[in-house]
Length: 270
Image (cartoon, rainbow, N blue to C red):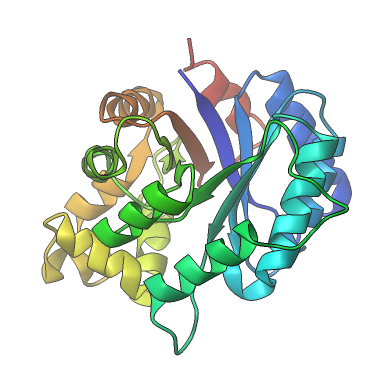
């Protein structure tokens, strides 16, 4: 089983960031993923996490397109790949206001590939590049211009479709929200945040067969159960469902975390 931890570090002091990385590594998780929203620059954060650990893979989930030019993203990727061989994965995603999304993403990735950085050669191994892809055409783009995909806010049914679209050779790392203890409000608040504010997630869930009723009023019980795994038994089953559906890696985002959350999750992994 390849299982990691996914979290936001927005607002967390540096000491907590370092302590979390050290704990995740000590517990034996394969990777530590983090989002870029309102906090530190993604590549700076990755450097902090890599420096605080000795073998853990650190992954951006995601570094946003709109925060930096393609040449900056490529330069940072190469620098971290050189400093920490085999330990950095760059997940890329986000939106381009006013642009055709797939065209803009393709141009961005092409810009990274063609970046003129003669003093900073591509390291060996080259850091894995994943795309935050949900829909069929975005997954095709991930297969063509990246090493795979990092879908977020998806059930195992999407994982199966993503694997089919990507083909067998590409890397598929799937985020899964989890609750170790029953807290219906926390699960529903998590789902509500995305079904209210993220049209691309709404569209993806409709493609999977969820209805307008499922997407209304914070999400139906059916939708919440599909997107949030609750309790140790269900979490273990959901991890296995994603892996059986074709995921190479599952990263767990803990809702309502406690100081023992990661240790409890580590006990679920053989």
